[in-house]
Amino acid sequence: MIEQGEMPNPDFGHGLVTFLFIIAQIGFLIAWRWEGYGGILSAISIVLMATVNIIWVQAAKDSGSEIIFIIPALLFIYCWWRTRKQLKQDGMDR
Image (cartoon, rainbow, N blue to C red):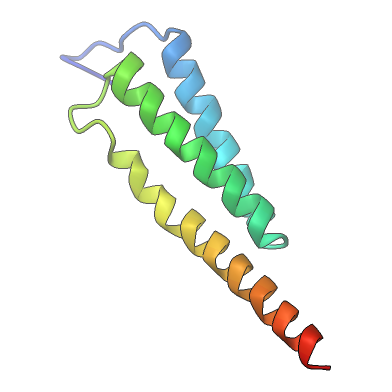
């Protein structure tokens, strides 16, 4: 954010990226209890955050590096999907 000793003026794009990052973190907290809802909320927020940062803000030299946070979100979604699949199989076997 700080370039050549000066902090750039924050605009709507920077605020939106920050808001989406906070929503992604809230999604991770929700995912500890409800894997599916939290994982989906985090994944959507992270994709939107990366898109806004790359297209609109273009602040970082390595734009798109925040997409690394999608890995835990996708793992939460995968665990939720596996749990649902296992519950369906256990329910049908009885």
